Amino acid sequence: MHEGGTTTRPDSLAVEEPLEIRVGGDSFAVTMRTPGDDFELAAGFLVSEGVIGGAGDLAGIRYCDDGRPDPSANIVDVSLGAGVARPGTGRRFYTSSSCGICGKDSLDAVRTSARWSVADDDLTVSADLVASLPDRLREGQAVFDRTGGLHAAGLFTDTGELLCLREDVGRHNAVDKVVGWALMQGLLPLRGRLLQVSGRTSFELVQKAWLAGIPLLSAVSAPSTLAVDLAAEAGMTLTGFVRGASMNIYAGGQRITSPRRLAQDME
Image (cartoon, rainbow, N blue to C red; front, top):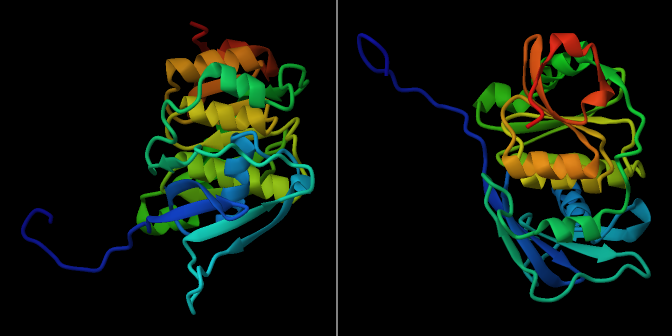
């Protein structure tokens, strides 16, 4: 509708469908996601749950047919590598596309699952490079251009080169897809890498970055208090409100040079 009347026309909308993740045939999680890169999503989710940590931990991923003539694209089954412990029974999660698995993990569980330290990562980048990441991310969002309804996560080098970008209706799914891509490429831990996300930063996103070994997480909006607490404990650099030439640094400010140009909030 607009001033002077109404018009009728087709509109492009982001697709949202459930994906069930099975491990060795047993149901482990259901997430609402944008179809595409489902194997990466499943692999990244298992990294964030501490089930796997490298390409050798993953024997294979396939779509399940459940005996039907047309295999379902909404069920994937992950086969773990030899010697990898299967996740405990009774840990079946449901994940909405909006908020991740809210409240399912305590800080103690994340500490236990973390395989790599990010506190000793010697990454150093300029404030100008961090400030440029949202625009670089936005330039790669092909589906967002059509629908306006997707979050994105982008993995960058310390010189600003985009290595991987994924979109999804859920910001946590977009991160899982990036982490899953990295695992399947044999790149974990992601030392010296930067993760830029659209939207806000939740506890779950910091958890996912930590378990992937990423030392710097940047967002265009605000973090939660628990996200800041977890980033500080992990020794991760966390920035928010990265817009134009300004940003807030909530943790790990030693990795970002030119601090005089930044608005810092260390509380």
